[in-house]
Amino acid sequence: MSESGLPASWEVRHSNSKNLPYYFNPETKESRWEPPSGTDTEKLKNYMAVNHTPTARPDAAGQAEGKIRCSHLLVKHSGSRRPSSWREAEITRSKEEAIEILKGYEQRIQEGESLGDIAVSESDCSSARKKGDLGFFGHGEMQKEFEDAAFALEPGQVSSVVETASGVHLIQRYG
Ligand SMILES: O=C(O)CN(Cc1ccccc1)C(=O)c1nc(-c2ccccc2)[nH]c1C(=O)O
Image 1 (cartoon, rainbow, N blue to C red):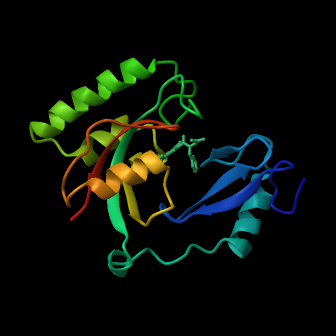
Image 2: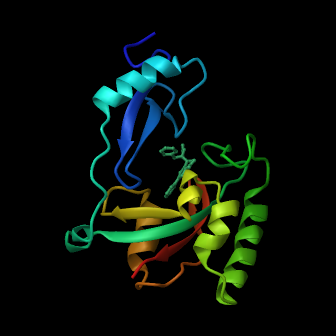
């Protein structure tokens, strides 16, 4: 057992875009928001209190350094790099099905619903609890396809379906 209480080869990292710690295994390249099974949670809690004080929320100044703020709705599928989420332990839908589901949400948003209100119950990303809000991020922080689509959006605009290794997304830029 390591000092952090995590199983061997797992480490704690910090996601700047979400201002949250996550757990990463450099050997298997797995990443997840929850501590892996076998973690001594008491030891991890003490370790985090000492080693992972949350950084300040990105304030509006984040905008000044070429950063943008987005929310997104992620639908994972069987081909996702991690086909599991807070909603569903094992995600088996096909990518085609996931795209059809997203197109349904796209229709609802065009008819006036907000992306965040749908994301809070339907998104397979842990940001669902924050209505899909990812905070501010700059170039080099997100997967390339996601970054390219997000930076091409005008403030307030919603993307079409965007595919990444995590699944398929709808992205909305704030502002
Ligand atoms: O792709 C992977 O191997 C695992 N990931 C990425 C990830 C990254 C850090 C912490 C937890 C999960 C996801 O599947 C994932 N990607 C996202 C994501 C992708 C693009 C933009 C924002 C979030 N969310 C999640 C999630 O579970 O909550």
